[in-house]
Length: 296
Image: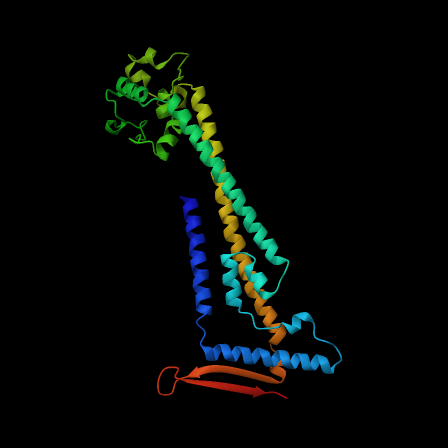
C-alpha cells in the first residue's frame, strides 16, 4: 500500500512537471519577443564591452541566452539531470541521472526478489499449513469449525476465505492458527492426541501454543520477502528525493545563471532594459506595449 502511494506521488510529480512545461510554451509571441530583445541586447553589450577592453568573449558568453527556471525545474522532475543539462552544466546531469538509474535498477532487482520470495513462502505455506486441521482444532476446542462463530478473547482474528495477503500473514504470525501446521506438537504430541481434551486444547497464550519448526521457517521466509519489499520501496523514495533535489537545484542554478549574466548590476540594467507585455484598453490584454529604460 505504501509503495503504491509512493508511485502515485511519483506519477503526480511527473504530470505536474508536464503541466509546467506546457505552461512554458503558452508565452504570447510578444512576451517571447520581449525576452529575446532583452537578452540579445544584453549579450550584445557584453560582447562590445569585452571587445573594447581587449578581451574576447568566451564560448559561454557567445551562446549566452535566457533560461527559464521553471522549465529547468520541470525538466529535472521528469528526468533528473535534464534541467542541469538545459541550463548548461555538463557534469551534474550525469550525477543526477546516474543516481536515478541506480535507484530504479535496484528497485526492479529487489522488487523481483520480493516477488520470487513471496512465491516461495506461499508455496511453503500451502504445503505445510492446513485449513482442515485448523477447523478440526476449532471444532474440538470450541464446538464449531468456524472462527467467525466464536466469541473468545484468544480468537482475535478471523481467517479470510481466500488466500489474500492477510491470510498468509495470519497463519504464521498468530498463535491462534498454530495447530494448522503439519508438524505442530504440544509436549511432543500432535493435534490428534488432544481432540478429546476440550477446553484444555485451547491456545490461551504463547505457553500453550504448539511448537512448529515449519511455522518458524515460514515466518523467517516472510521476513526475508518483506525486507526486499522495504528495500524496493526505499528506492522509490530515493527517486522522489533525487527528482526534487535535481529540480530545485536546476531552478536555483538557472536563476543564478540569469542573474549573473543579465541581472541587476550587470550589463543589461547598466545600459538598456527592454520589456514587452500586454495592456488592456478596449478589452482584456488587447494592446501590446514595449518599454525601454536607459540608464547612465
